[in-house]
Structure formats: C-alpha cells, structure tokens
Image (cartoon, rainbow, N blue to C red):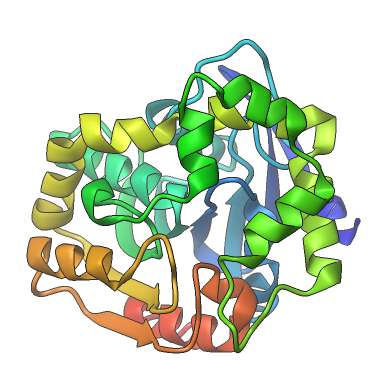
Length: 285
C-alpha cells in the first residue's frame, strides 16, 4: 500500500506506532484519527497540502501500529503518544486537526497546555465530528454492544461484511461508502488482528464521561485558535453535539458541511480541506 510507504514505525513507551509523514513548511500539521479507523482517513486531505509538513499517526491498537493485548487503551496514552511522536520528529510546536475519537485526544492536549505540562506548543486546533460531549452523542448499537459484557464476543464475531455495513451507515446518502474504500479500511482495521480488540479500543467512550469536566473546560478556556468543522448528516456526533460545543466556546468559528456525514474528510476531501484551512487561517498550505 502506497500509504504505508510514506511512513515509518516510531518507538514510543507503550509500543511502536505508525506515522505517515509529508515534507513541507513548518510547523507540522498533525491529523488525529477516530475509531475504528486510522490516519489513512486523511490521505486525500494531505494530498491537497503539497506545501505543508504533516504527520498522521495511527494510535496504538489501530491501523499499522502495534496492537498489544491485553492492554488498557485510552485517551491519556494516545495523547502521550502524540507528544512522543512530535519529539521524535524534533518538533516543539504543532497545529492539530482531529476527528471522532481524536477530538478527545486533542482536548486532552489542550488541557495539558492549560496546566503547563504539554511538551510542545499547540497553536491551532480544528475539531471535526467527534462525540466530545458524550451525553449529546447518539451511540450506535455496535458501540453499546462492544462496551457491554458481550464486547469480547462481538469482537470475535466481527468480519469484513459486518464492518462494511457498519461503516457505510456513517456516510451520507449523497456520498455513500465506496467498495474499494471499505476494503482498504478493513485491511487496516484487521491488520495484525486489530478487529479482535475492538472492545478494548472502544473504552475511550467511557472516558468522555469521566474526564468531561477537564476536556470541556479545555474547550472553553484554552487560549489558542479553535474551530469546529462538522458534517451535519452525522448519525453519531450529530448537530446536537456541535450545538453543545458552541455553548462551551461561543467565539469559535464553525463550518457546517450540510450534506456530509461522519467522515467528511473521506466523503468530500476538497470541501473538508478548504474548510479546514479557513478555520486554521492557514494561507501557506
């Protein structure tokens, strides 16, 4: 896969993580993916940024990264890994674009900067289609099953067809999931048996309740540039979540993509990239 050739494995404390890298002007623009996919989600966006240095890590347990088991996967460790990845690339500042689960990683990094413990300077952040305010999100049946005592069994029963059906339901009717895209995503999800640990990777959902005060506080108080980019046809991180984010950060600029679903960067990468750059106020890319 061409995507794999564009990156390398980086050693971190909990294991090796795959990081796709592209050269260009500093600082790095770091893409943080969601569950259950990986940095590959942003490839068409990265292709549209020929002049910007980018990093797209696969979190531990996802994509081409190590998948240790047993292991307690979580947002705090994912944030640690982001810090280690930036250090490994010699960077002391970054911008972040985060999707789905990655939005919680981004808000943890924002909270660390507020506390004065972040190892790099976080300049600008864009949050996209993530259930950051979990009580306003609409969890899918498969997520509820994975979080239940039946989670290990549900993981063992997962297969390519089931995965494609579940993923396809997150796309808008105007931009349905392509069969080739579904096959590529399944290859990455199932790499090294990753689909068998879905119940372990899904635990981050509970952390969104446990750390709500910390992460919601960061959204409201972090002093950097923060914007929201939302596909309004999302059946999970719905417009109800976006409205909650607006309440936490009334001054934040928002771009709504009215006809796109949960994966706007895959459904319409051109529209996503244009909106992302507008929110970053980045004219150098």
